Length: 339
Image (tube, rainbow, N blue to C red):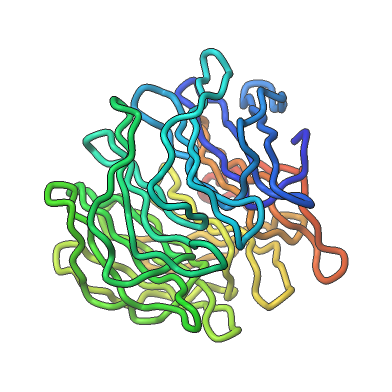
C-alpha cells in the first residue's frame, strides 16, 4: 500500500477494486487508497473528511460506502459519518450518529438500512445502544438496545434477515451471551450463550446458514476453540479446535464453502503467520502455507477471482512491532496440489 496502517477497513467495491481507508499509524489517518486486482497496484484517492480508526465501512446498495464512527484516540470516539462515492472518488459528510462510538459493528440489512451496534463510548465504556442509518434519507434513528453492553464483538447477518451478535468485552470480563436483532420489530432477543466467553474473535456465515466462531481472547489467553451457531435451533455446538490459538485474526468464507483463517496473535505481544482452512463437511482444520510475516489487525477481502487480499495490520513482535503497508494475496490450491 502507499501508507502503513492498522485498525483500518477494506471494502470490495462493485467495480471490483478494493477501498482501504483510515486506520492508525502514530495517530488516526485520513488517507485512503484503491487496489486494482487487474494490475496488482495501489493508487491513492481523496482523503476522508475526518481521520478515524476502529471505525466501520459498509457497502450500500447504490455502490457508495458508509463510514461510521471510530476514534482519533481510543478514549475519544466520534459520532461523525461520511460517504465515499467510487464514481467521483470523493467523500461527503452525512448525518452524525446519535451516539459517538468506536470498535462497534455495522451490518447491512435486507431493507438497505445499516445497523450499528455496541462499541466503546468516551473513556472506554461499553455501549448497549444501536441505531439505523437510512441511505435514502441520509439519517440515523435509534432502534432497540442490546441486553448486554459490549465491544470487540461480532455481528453476522443470518439468512432469515436477523442479525446475530455474540461475545465481546465489557470491563472487566469477556462475554458469552448472544443476541438476535429483528429488523421487522427493531428489537433484540437473547439466544443460547456461546460455549466459551471470548472477544476479538471472528464469526463467519457458512453456506449452510450456520455461523462459525473462531478463536478469541479470554483472561489473558488466546483461544483455540471454535463453535457453530445453528439458527434453526438457536443453539451452539463445539467443533474442532484451531491448530493454533489466536485472536485479532481474520476469517473469510471461500467460494467452495471452506473458511480461511489468517494470522492474529497468540500471546500478549506474540503475533503469528499461520494460516488454516476449515472444511465444514468434515469439521476439520488444516494448516496452509504461512503468511511469510507475523501479522494481526489486518483486513482480508475476497476478490472476484477467488484470491484473498490480506492488507496492512501490525507486523513484528515486541519492540519491533509496527503498522505495515505490505499486502499479500492468498489463492487456495487445487486439490492434490500443495498450498
